Image (cartoon, rainbow over all chains, first blue to last red):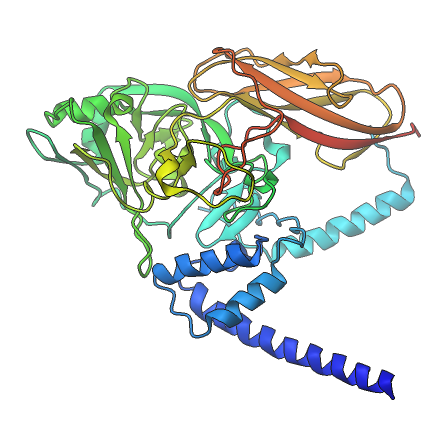
Length: 98
Length: 382
């Protein structure tokens, strides 16, 4: 019985986290991409305090955040300084493109 | 060198197909060979290790750093405003700038944050590795000749420069101030050409400030205004942006605003671009290579260690020995036996400065110049 409850709790937690992540991603898309691409964010790994400072800087530069806490939780979870940075990709060859 | 067997060849071919498919989805940057893509809007592109083979970096392989969306400056409508503490305000066309005496200089341009990705604890900003640097021949009029044309007050303290790029929303404009002494240096140019052709749009067409030996932030692109001023600009990109602590503090410490200073000259530095970190090679002769430069100084010497720093050997340097320009270096080496090797490089400049073992951590991750380090595995010969 305990195992069932634990499994149900974990599933519910994961489901809730997914919903939050999806909402946060929409917020991120809405609030950040007017000025720059998301790669700039996703290639960084920072502490929660550092992400907080970045959000404050962006708010000062005109980002209108509906839910700062949601974004902060999302960034500090997905792009935490405890995680490694994946190798950045190469752009496609544009050397002959004018 | 590493000689793959049939299974490895097949895996490699499949990998190449997969990479090619993956790469096809990555953005194409006009005029650019494949570059390490840190950001595509605006473009922030790092030079891959494989391109560090030419003393003059071709334009299509030169790194790109942009703070704001890239402007499209048209030749016909371009005007360079020269104003402030001048006898006569000017609005110069490209033809006017080309009529002035043209000067050439080979100079290395390095992003202030090159190597930021090596700092621990991590700091915000583009996580550059070794490749936010390049070396090119720049040509155009001396900034001092432009200022003379306007009858500028040469005793003024600063020259302010503004590019055509503008911020989105409330993002501040990219404006920089250069001490007049450096602005009047004969090596400081307003370049119109890069490696013998008009500066590509992504690198600042039609006019880019060339400030040899100084950090990339001083090399303003798409310059449309030069203002002679008594004071430095107070905008974000002068303060608090692009400042460095006067006194080092423990890694992770917050900045102390009163102790931050404007960054000027770059520091002595070398980096290893071949082999790359975690390479696996077959037992046999190897060439270790890389770059070294020292801001306003010349590179005198690069030493390489293949045993973690116990012994050092002099690397062979490219012959051009100039202030402001990098030297490429190489060392031929045959590993004595299979195993894991830690390769190090360190440079010394003409003022006697030597690369430190540890770069000073700073809150924005600027001026990384620690002795470089790459680990490789040498496997038994086939």
